[in-house]
Image 1 (cartoon, rainbow, N blue to C red):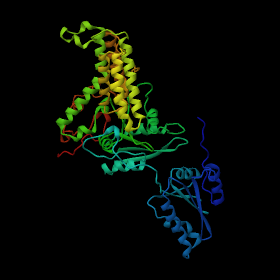
Image 2 (image 1 turned 120 degrees about the vertical axis):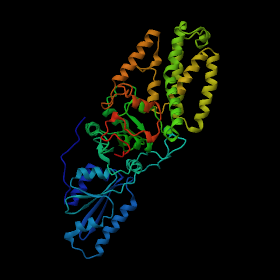
Image 3 (image 1 turned 180 degrees about the horizontal axis):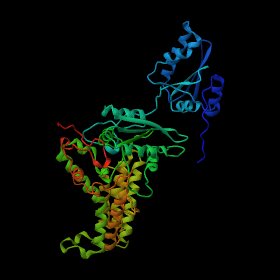
Image 4 (image 1 turned 90 degrees about the vertical axis):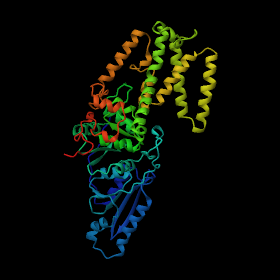
Length: 492
């Protein structure tokens, strides 16, 4: 990638040179949204640079009124810089000395105020990003619980997290990623809980990102910080719920928030982080455990029902006499394996069509596809009823998976670890062994993917299988190596 970095130029004392720099570098005068307002205060020129659409116009007008009002008083022109600084009535004002940093801030939605002869710029945060109000995410709905969710504004997302964790040790480190996009990115953790080595690893991986822009926001960041390659299983967890993110921060995880993305990245994560849902913690422990086991059953159904049935079709002698009905009840002209792949492909067609179809039409489309197309396909002999049954059960099982990324991974027909690719009994055993070995060898930010199963941790595994009451969960997960393992203070 070509290097677009140039030698940093200090802010000129001559306002004409600063204006020329903005014209050449930012395209002021060519791009309609790059604006400048020049004022003469005490016989000196003051320039305000801003970006239309990302700034609150009311604040800019208020700043200009305060600056113009200086002319109404007898002030010393030699003290203009100090007077202007006192008149910048805003919560966040800082000084920058280079034009490169000044342009970065202006393009981020801040206002730059340059006083003739000062040699630096005042940067004022009056950003007003276009966006939507926090609302419950569609993919993580709960019956009881908070209805707010992350949005595409990194400032709002940080505030949603701060609202739930009012700890003075919560750290939110801001940086910019992307040579051209300069996208804002925050790393969030609690200083006396998170493992310093984990924080250092995350910061190092983010600092090493060399890309022109984060067009896909957090997904691009994920592909840089973890060695995903063609492994379909998700190595980080996404969430659009602030309560879920706050809970993981309190456990010792590190959260990555990327501007323009309504979801945040939770690191590090294991396979079992993707099978838990917020609804389990909004109900009684016994009910939450029941819901969790129902989800486990759905996940297992999505991966095992279809291949086990296919195994019995290929090896009918494995079935006892009173269970012969499970196999294929009538002969078909199309190979069963081809029927399975065609049915799987049809399910994917329906899923993709539902995503790209307006809500008012998607329900009707689903009914037409399920009732008419499915029934007719069986009657004409394209599919056997058993294939449609078990493919449908597998598809329903994927919808019970809380993690959308994990459901896609377990449903991917071409997945080399997919247990739905059974061909024979021997190959089935080989597939199971290969899949388990591959998953056991996966590490996400030096974290074993199958923990607490491999390496085995009985207490942690119990926490995965059973939704325990909060007063009983006094120890944080050891997999994140927290500095403070106790959740609740104990009386000595």
